[in-house]
Length: 202
Image 1 (spheres, rainbow, N blue to C red):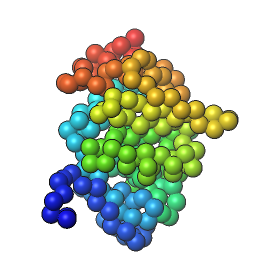
Image 2: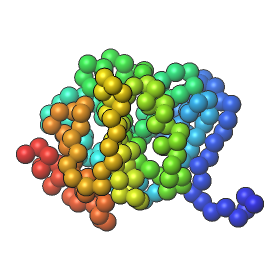
Image 3: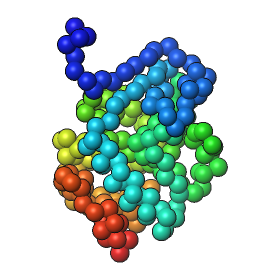
């Protein structure tokens, strides 16, 4: 019975138009538009810690080295009239910044990062990754802080190469020079963002 379910829940409202989604879309909206549905997936403390860590180190790298723009989880990436997902993080390279408007990015980002939510551990893999591949996003990271893995998908002329990492150095294919040590993502508390950024930039 519904009364027996314990939160957090993934909430889904079906049969919603793109116009309805963008009418309510704003900084205070927690909804994504996925395949003609409004979807809300609550974030856990662990999710937010990893999000904040990557937002700071990746944002700091771009501030120092340039190469593109970074957006967080409240900025839609419009892929078509039924899909405007909001990745936890996305990078748009400089040559594609003309597609970034005040309300959304038109077309796919160059790199998206999704962090698994405690409310549904396979939600991103099941719902979003197939559409990201269809859009041919060049680089996709799926971070699971509960299993302590990063699934990396990088587009090649022969399709997507896939690797799963528990530790070790992970270099971005989209932003030359940016890397992380995957093991930075698992401790509680997470390591100093400034110390990690200095190591990346060294």
